[in-house]
Length: 202
Image 1 (tube, one colour):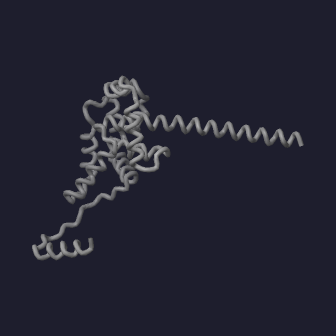
Image 2 (image 1 turned 90 degrees about the vertical axis):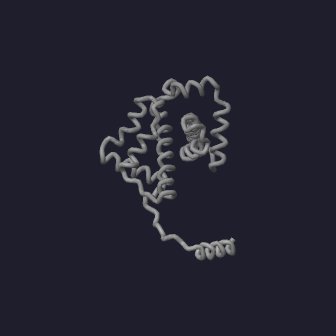
Image 3 (image 1 turned 30 degrees about the vertical axis):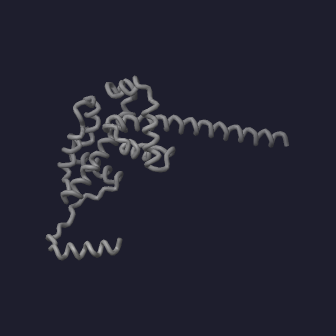
């Protein structure tokens, strides 16, 4: 009986250690996501929506975009001023390169998504692979470290790499690239008729 009790206690202790370690790993991971979201927030021009989308895609802490945006804004407020200044001036001194890469890569892809949507919705244009690759290069400001830019552009060095890069981009953001169908201009009578239908439906 004593041996069985000791075995149960040993299993409970092992389980508790496993839970503590899992919590420690999760806490460390959340801290990294907070740091990366701060990078996205600052280098996107203080766009909380972009940083919120990033945080929501990486963290289990926030359950909605609004809560993720609020969390990122609060993390920025509570961060020491000297840390924020140093991050803007020399991000390499603040975080490891692999941590920065994830943040900057997301920022570039998010901006590429916005550009693709604008081309599709406003102009009815399906950007070609060449156009999208050129746009990615255009999205990298000169103020970003040169070696960071080189790492971000490395997947686009070959045609195969470009296809894989853009396929991953479409899968990540659910983009379907294509032209909008154009329609002939409507007469005034048709416009008024459709407006009355919409008004009635509303």
